[in-house]
Amino acid sequence: MTTVELIAQHIVNHLASQKPLFIAIQGPQGSGKSYTTAQVQKILQSPPHLLRVVVFSLDDLYLPHEDLVSLAASHPQNVLWQGRGQPGTHDVELGVKILRSLKQGIGTVELPRFDKSLYSGEGDRLPLDGSGIVIEQPPTVDVVIFEGWCVGFRSISQDDLLLRWNGIWREEREKLSLTENQMGRLEDIEAVNEKLNDYDQLWEFFDCFIQVIVTS
Image (cartoon, rainbow, N blue to C red; front, side, top):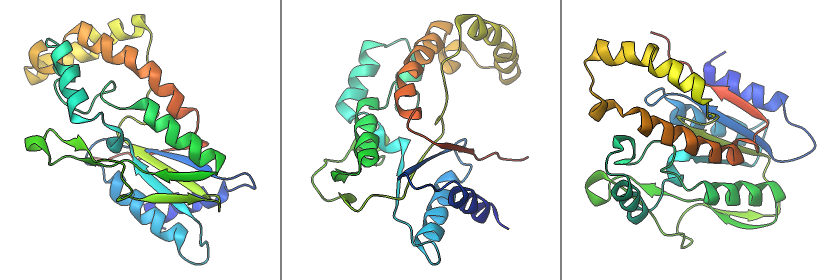
């Protein structure tokens, strides 16, 4: 059985009378999670399952370009917020609104889209004008799959953060000859860690978490 088939079967095994089933898939960048998610969706929508499946990505919740520029300008020393990617660069409120609407199973939901090619690669969110994927409810969606590199990540305590900063992170900085201007200062990482608290509002929707692990 392939990885995709294993994940699809795991989801089917967790289906219950209460719909939809919320699935979170996490994996590092380049791990193939987007491809895997698309293939899982294909299996679940095909016979014998014939499920109604909605898939969207944390990447599509990036702030609009104007807000990304504003975030970078208001934190000029924080290299982690000089572009999209890290916690703090996503529209958590929009994500919660979408997940809540899908959970309630009533009304029309348009999934956001972020075009990474715009503004010379800085990217921008496309308008919610009906040209994207629109979910009409009812009928209720059977499965919602949400994927992203930091899906399920939670803030750690200040003590744990300092332990890692002075331990394994220092070792990695020295091994790779990275400066704080490249990797981020302690206060930069503290700011991102604080923002992770907001993401708990998203994670609480999910019934199952699946992690894609890349083996060397």
